[in-house]
Length: 201
Image (cartoon, rainbow, N blue to C red; front, top):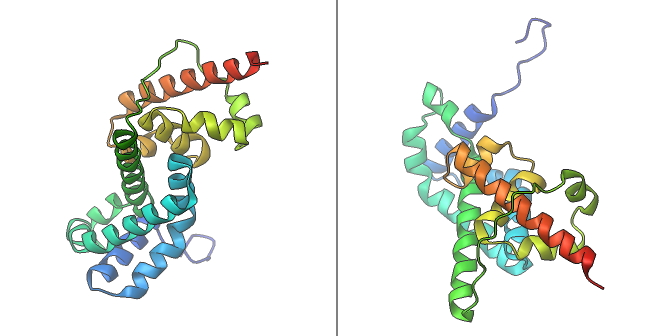
């Protein structure tokens, strides 16, 4: 209860820990609840990473199965009602799994096709306004899909999913400085790509 007499909202992390505890007890309703909560954002991440709706659905389904399989271990590490519960964010855990699955599929497809997308670096940052005005048009989508895998993930998590840098870094298993460097390179590569589009006849 707050000072004004209104009920206190449930802390999202504690709520996540309780949900995982139910999954660890093999309650299928808890998994369905997690899917309802997170499937939308996970589908967006997967689709923007791989550019294919069916592949994105497969990735999200696999991530949800992994959540079910890992629930007992997650529950043991983040027991509901304990201080450790505050360390669990299902949205971040699932975003990390989906991002890694998407990168794995992209690398597999590249090995099969023999294609390679080199890392590109530029000292000029991407204009944020350009990302905002372009939104998810066909041109922007194509340019994002052409980025190297981890650069693409940095852009998707930061600009399209609005994750703070710390959460995006955690989703990619990176420290914040390494993530910011990756994001800088991704922004620079996109700026060059946007400029090349502008120069095209």
